[in-house]
Image 1 (cartoon, one colour):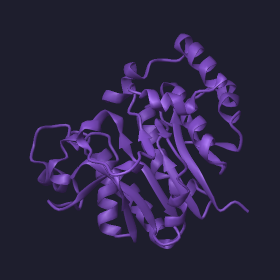
Image 2 (image 1 turned 180 degrees about the vertical axis):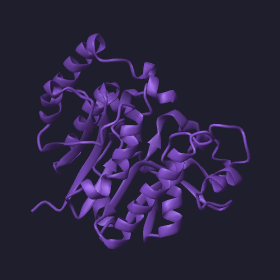
Image 3 (image 1 turned 135 degrees about the horizontal axis):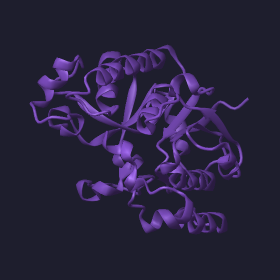
Length: 273
């Protein structure tokens, strides 16, 4: 019986090309099963994903707003995973090496995660729709955060099945509902809800360095030791060395044809809502 695997999310065609490269990268280094929580992708395109082998397609929570659908899918990661150990990665991520050690770490801790590029909640202007004091605004909305709270980047998470993580994801859902209820002041992002859930649940967790969630857009903000293992490509910027990792005859043909029929992620209207 398989006890470990990967999960990603694909909601809508805007991220379809990213997901192809994500699958190519994972398959270069790992053979564990990959679940894709998928919504608003025509079924005729499913074989383009499953060609990578051991890829399982499951419906993501349906929503006309593809960004909202992806957020709801992230809240459902715990219940959607059939494995004892799960690595979740955003579909715009490219593995640059094998990360088997992440599964090994999960034998000792509940949760593995990385800090956001801007980890201090007190400076997390990215969570607010309005220019107000950050912590009082978050607290006023009902998020149990303070000046010492940390913002994590949910693009990479690894967790195991246990009661503590079931509680964590229940709280994640609870506080994301708070975010949705306060769209007048809060942007539709999951980091604030995740930070609140971690603060309240206090799982036995290990914070990994940025090598495991390196956002290429913010490359000037890092001081790294060692190799980048997990490259978060932050569309539309996909570095050449990520392209080198995923390059094959299949991906080269796909990329050539994609420019004629896939929508451009930059023009995704849901990204600004």
